Length: 425
Image (cartoon, rainbow, N blue to C red; front, side, top):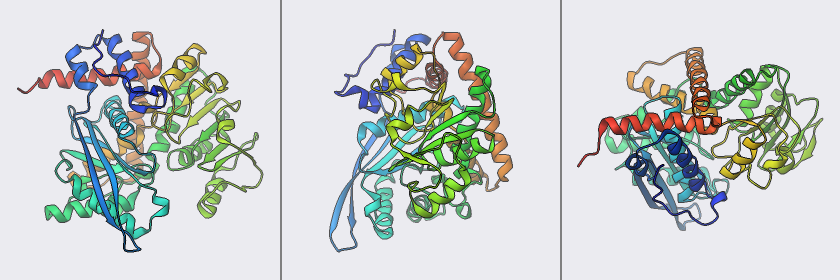
């Protein structure tokens, strides 16, 4: 049995790092992980907390708190997004960096796990303030990031523009245009075709493989999606195009529902124009708690962490859950869902299309040669399908859930690298 070396913080079900550790513990026991390797994998490799002073538009100076956590670099450079949110915390960033380690290992791309975040409310900041925030944060990270060290990407409330500022700031300091420092960039600055669609498309592929695995219809299923950004919105669009009925979808303000199915192209066009789903014709307004418990074939939580907990897991009526968000289901909820016989395609598999195409972008930047979009999608699909099969095989081998099967697969791959590299002393 793996030896636990960390105390459990208070409020464990709402603490994402505790939730990540619980899954690691379960997988470590099943694969009989060496206690020394367990200690390494349960402790982030490196954490940096930075003060980020920014001159605001009104002439005042504010100091924001930023983080960058590298969970593991055993398999390659740390890889993971940067999020801007008032809810960012060190434990959240720790958990997200650990999930990135497992995610990269599940799809077998040569990255470790990293994550970053700044405590701020980007909706209350101007374009100029966000640029100054990003550039100063980047300057604070210069000692630990780089194409061979740590490669950031977009995440919640960041995007192509944020990555362009980060790339430019890093390049100015190194006196060389360094495209491979970030992924998720604009295509004209070395971004990859298909990167924006990658996570949502990967979720759709995982829904398809899950239905096939369970012997359920591969078209015509009723699907509920929580979230309408690049993951939820585009995932819903791809599932709509695959012939499924999207009966409900949400944004940060609430959700819309139509039992006969929503016209997803029209929904996304409305959202693009109005910036909210509210008022979309032909749909009733419901709240997010109602959305999660609607009767459906497939539920895709694609918003944020800790949405399915011990408080609502008994009320979930889906047959299949495919996690588009990172950490949407607590460990306590996992036990309930498993007891009820629900199949859960875990986040570290289901939303790994994004990091897979980020890897492709990094490779293309380093080659200076770029692929056509269909090549990107075909290569991603092959990786996602093969990874799904690996996870199911591990779950069957260890007689466990798909989530813990995914963790077993990932932990074994990272542990192999640590064992082969040895401990430097």
